[in-house]
Length: 289
Image (cartoon, rainbow, N blue to C red):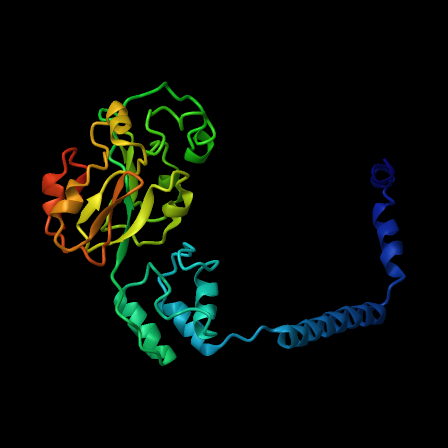
């Protein structure tokens, strides 16, 4: 209202002139110089502070970080590739600690660090269950949270009658950053070509169904049930019944039955396939390359 009154009476411009007329050009120059000088001092202070507080990074650490794949999956046990590179340079981790990196990258990191890198077999996740919907009996329909850890708190472990098997709710799928694991007919399956062996799915599975297995090992036992044979037969047509026929037919002492479940020693297994040939439930399988 005041300004409108000034404009209406024609006193607006003279009033504005009176307001700014009290400041001389010299005063405005001084004010500008003070503001500019203050800004310059603050800039110099921040520049000096950044130099003083700068965290120095080892050149080797930068080089190692550039060699790492950058997946930041945590499979190495460290919080991302930056932390992994730092651990390698500081001698806390081996040059081949990254499970995602190839053998060539491990060798390059080892050369950079002046270390000999032992050759390691590439590993991929394997789900020790093939109890699909048609092969495993169902107790009830589960309508709860679609998460395996949540379902594990429900009596009976979700809907399947086998309490040891895959729940098929896909918690492993959600944590895989490489699109290497999917649910097919109620069971998680791993694409070995995509799997990097980061082990995130291994940690996520509440039934401990997933383990890292050397990719070159083709013979696997696709079951995790510790129940006795007659109980396994009552709810699954393809579960291990602990008959020990596989043990008797192995020439290399590579397979044993422990707690009613056949287990393979991958360091001894030659993938001859004899154990799979005699397995009555066909739960021992020889996978193709």
